[in-house]
Image (tube, rainbow, N blue to C red; front, side, top):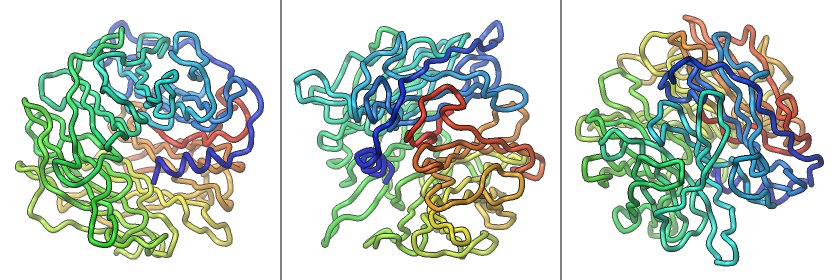
Length: 481
């Protein structure tokens, strides 16, 4: 699971060297903000935030930082970037060991000014000597990019236990303001901070939701999106449900309403998910990734991992039977093998401009030749009949024109992001290999054509490329934009 893997990796990472260099390259913005989701500087091109949560900052191992690379008409431009940490002027907090700044990210226009803001769930942050932990830091977008940040200060839950363990944004009550959902590990509680949220750190109100009492599913990971087409954002809560001989992964859909989130139907569990209308019927479909594949006993490694599509309807979930995809499904490249981790990471976007969202699926432990855990990314296509393996394509560092070489423990596909950076109506692929160069990490950018993602003209870059510190960082652990 994503939270656990970062903590374990950070605990065993070697000490890094060097301090954090903060860059604030000038970025060009239009006279008025674009209002595009994922556009931090409002210039009409979407940007990408990249987490490096185990990087050493100000001498503190695991303090972490976030890099922002800004978009242009030619795609991501690594000359237009920022490195942001708790050592950056205008950002709350102080770098401390194992804060893991950046390993929880979400974005949305929290103050309603037309610029996308970036939210960092700093769940490892210790609150003085109170025993509480967890902060929600909002990095505010603006015409010159992200220049300042604020911790949400009120209202807050009475007890904080790794507040910000998972974060998501959306208009959950349909009032036109962006709200923030955050998991507080005290009792696996979900907290909804109703928007707008001011730049002084005040939310309009706080609504706690006890998902375990509601549904028997604890809150571990949150995924926001529109399922039933009513205008309010719905929220998928992913976690564990107790069964006779232990626990199994399970998800539950909370539907948005004027009264807030309402618990709805349960569906396939997993460790990542995305909501997108893959058959273009007006209702969002829920795509869950379970890298262990089996939703009950879940033996380590399972049978290679699976992706399950649960279709949406006006009532929330359709009566249509959910459809499972593995690497043994018709048209899907590869073969389902133990420990592939197919479904580890997911993202949705229309890669060829045909109007149907497609799904990027990371299999970060896929073996390529003799290289174990080298990793791949597969694009599954959306269609009028739903998600399909027909026309699926897979990419790795051994794909022609993709920089690099597939090596053991690179973990290519660790995070995936489909986003229309150049604003041409097609989404490009941004993906990472957090284990590249023994856990330093790297990110790849692949463009799109009317035929889909192409490796031609692809490029890669690392944290130091952007001015970040050298050494273990898990650069690319999380992608957001």
